[in-house]
Length: 248
Image (cartoon, rainbow, N blue to C red; front, side, top):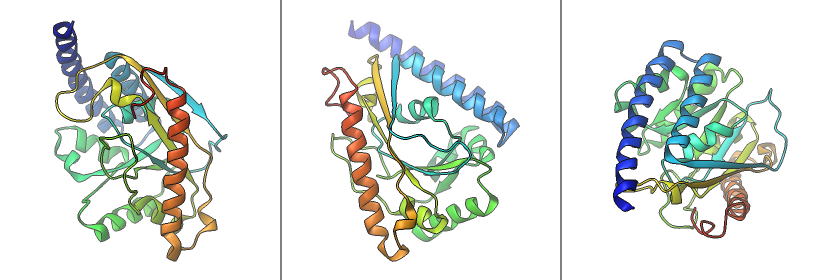
């Protein structure tokens, strides 16, 4: 059984890599456009299908399709990104570590699509990059932050970084908490990630109005974001069968 799973995983990752490169090339040619959005959603759904993930989604509030938001999520697995993209109603522009730009084609395509890459060790430079993205205009898209800054290994949320809170306070955009559960059971976050087909739950929480906070009290908004994601994570875990519920 383990041998078959290993072979399936090796072939699956090879297929995903090839599909990612082809999709990146096509997205790069179209740039920031509706066609690129459709290509990205198609890639996400194929990734999930190959990994054997079935996404369960819950939306706690209706979001305005004509507004931009700051989306804030936990992060546990390589699978989080395709799972969220596959069910998001808004075009997302990810705030990601600059090391990803070194991946051939991928970095070029992601920049062409408007995603933002930052040096996590350079807080001032990261803030500048995010401000420049706002200055260019979001064009109906929303910004997306993995607020922990890295993938969590355990079941508990890590401390949240302040970037999403500062971005919300400077722009006045509402923050939408997102929680993903079950992804780590399908694809481990570290080492060689064997596929273990199963359900992944994604919960979109109710928006948090940034206008209720001052820039000087950004720590309070960070705490509110973390509390909302933690609450959404409990609801996401409750959507999973009991055998996978403990896994984030």
